[in-house]
Amino acid sequence: MTADALPTGPMLLEQLIYQVRGVQAARLITDPQGQIDEIHVVGTPQRNPKQIVRDIESILYVRGGVRLDHRKISLVQVAERETTTGRRLQLLEVTTAAGEAGTQVEVRLALQERRFEGSACDSGEVASRSMLAAAATIEALNRAIGARGSFRLERLQRQPLGELDTFLTHLSFVLEGSFEALLGVSVVREDEATAAARAVLDAANRRVERLLSDPNSQG
Image 1 (cartoon, rainbow, N blue to C red):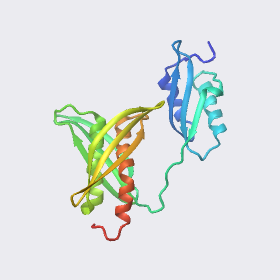
Image 2: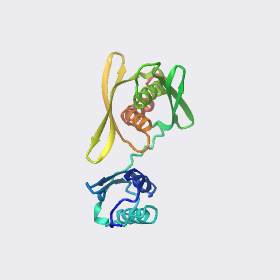
Image 3: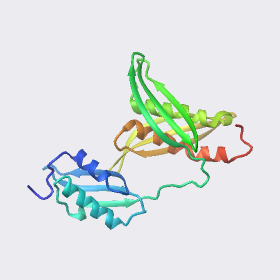
C-alpha cells in the first residue's frame, strides 16, 4: 500500500481524528489518486500542538492503517470562549422525529439548572433539518429571555470557510421597535441540525448574557 493511500473513506478517517483530545474540527483533502494531500485541524489551546499532531498520526496509523507525514497536518488552535457569569445558554439536545404531520425538530437549551425547549415542524412544506433546528432554537431562546425582547431568524446559510464547512446565521434582536443585527458561526461536524442550532446560539448568547445581567431588564 502506498504510504498515504486510503484503506477506508476520508469521512471515516476524519471521524478518527475527532477522537483525538483537543480536536474541534477536521477536514481531510485528497489528491486525484485518492491519497492524503492535506489535513486541516482546529484544536483547543489546552494541549501542546505537537502532541495533538502526534496523536493524529498515531490514530490514523493504528486505527486507519495510514502512515502519514506530520508535515501534511495543518493545525490552528482557537481558544474556547468562557463565561464567568453563568448566564450563557448551553445546547443540550437536538432531536428529530418524523410523523404524519411532517418532520419535527426539537431543541433543548440549559441555563444553569433551568431548561428551555423549542420545536419546529415542516408541516408538509419542504424544509431542511438545519432550518427546522434553527427555528426551534429561536423558539427556545425566546422562552429563555421572556419579556426582555425577542430573537428572529433572518438567514441561515451553509458556507465553506477555507477548508472548513460552516453554518453562518444572521439574527435580529427586537426590543421596543429597535432592531439589533447578530451574527454567528458554527463548524459542521457530524450533524448539520446540531451545527445550525449552535450557529444560532453563537449569534444570540452574547446578547443573552447582557440581558440576563441587567437588573433593570424585564423578567
